[in-house]
Image (cartoon, rainbow, N blue to C red; front, side, top):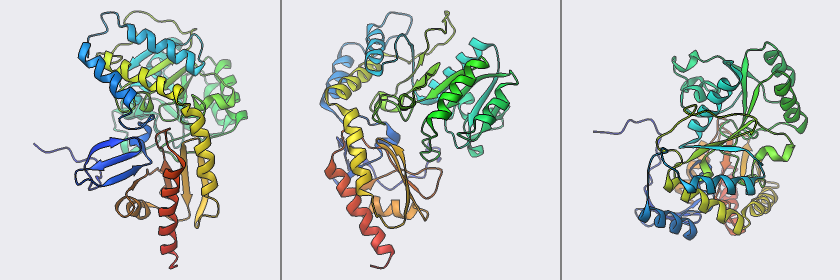
Length: 380
């Protein structure tokens, strides 16, 4: 049997990792500035994390959601305390796509409506409803296209109201900072106006914080900078530091009923142990402040960089936009300088999503390599 070949793979085989270092099967060390799509939030193999997961599997790795799991309750309480999302309710699942799927389903149940509004250049996952709200026709199968989704440009409040006033929309789903789409975000006026429109037209507002949450932007959630309040918040990626886990935080006004949502593996004991360890380290090592500090240093180091058009994003969710396609540059960073970075829908953008434990010397290594390659491009 062979693998279903859907990934363009780099010729590298990682076998172990520590903090921001990844080692391949030949012993070569790589600097990880991508964290597997913003998944590694507290560094590879953090001792607190390893201990928590190891201890849990020695006792109980899994049982179904038909029985009580005190770890789920502990996780909900810690999430409320650290995030500041008071009285929200937690439903746990396995991934970001599943989180958005459940968020959309819940919004439809709650409002009795079936249409969704999403934004151009969005990415919300690959499951049925989540992929229908993703602005990428290449990954939307004919089956998924049956969903009724309207797309407007990020920042276009007039376009949003035009759709919502028809009275058919159950939910607006939005990434406060677009990830795959290219690290774009809008203004305080837009986000607060969006919240008002959703309240006016009885529409659930879903904040997709799958990539931008868990301290990555310097706030626990990216939306908190702009002073608006979602009805549902989807989370995943950095939540488990590599262990598959996701969830939605649900406003207290939305009522539950038995059987409304369900999952086999979601919120299992190992997932909760991993997630609790992440929150503990995030707080004890002051990693949200570090995200702010290292972001400022990153931006400082990028000044006067040749060919750089703009720096997008916030915190440690950053994009360097150049005046040329960066695919070859990223290959040189990987194979010549042993540095992992990410791509985006924008072919001119290098995406930076490192562990929140990153230090200045890691950033120095990246810019030394980047400047070297840009000078070679200029024949200097």
